[in-house]
Image 1 (cartoon, helix red, strand yellow):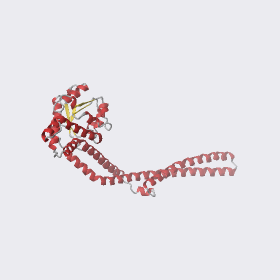
Image 2 (spheres, rainbow, N blue to C red):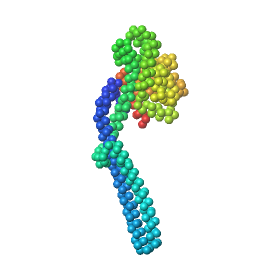
Image 3 (cartoon, helix red, strand yellow):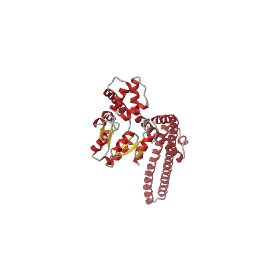
Image 4 (cartoon, helix red, strand yellow):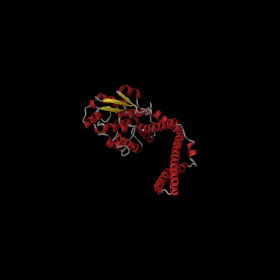
Length: 353
């Protein structure tokens, strides 16, 4: 997976990929025509082989008939009887040999109709060397993978930033990345209290939390995807009998709204939300310790995957090993996470190998 220093860099790369799209579509059509040319060549070979086999069988039949005529002219009843059976056998072989010819001609006709071509030679004109075609297809596949992963990453990392932007825009307030960074540390309830006090809002912290959750549920229902390969990695853990849990400060309804697009209920052995423990934020170890308790394991037996620096420090202070996930969010202090975490991952796919 491509790793980015910030969300802005991820979105910039996505735009670069979109700019490349027309050219990649042309390459895709070139590769498709080359595959069609290979198909045409194979069908042409099949037809030639079928015709050659038919010609041999027809030659055998003609020879058997000539031998039958000679035997009958000589009055040799025994030989004549033998070649009558031979003629019947050869005639059956001719009939059988016509099958592959008809099949090849039928497939060629369908191909020509599908490609709006007059003959196979016109299609074979687009042939490429096998190595060239393989390189072209590899380039197209790499582009498709890069686009899909970058698109999903942009969706995933920008959800709550978009919620913040929409929340501020509805009130005519200016949004800043520093505000998002502060909220990432505070969590929902403390973040809502901070927002009320910092901007002098009339709403209560609970009303703001409710609005954030409603907006978040909308995004999680329609837009949010798991990070590329994360689903496959969790499934691989389950296949090995390794217990898994989600420890999140998100509201339970927000996370559940990803169903059925993402099968959250069947992926993890347990799920702990900030609202279920005494201290709701990841500045305190409660949420991690409760996850371990529900799994029936000791803290030192756990590995926590986190993309927030504060949460990494908290999990480590609770006696848990920690892997830092560098995910490209603009508010993520990448250098500090790399220095703090015992292990750094930039994609879930790298853990599958």
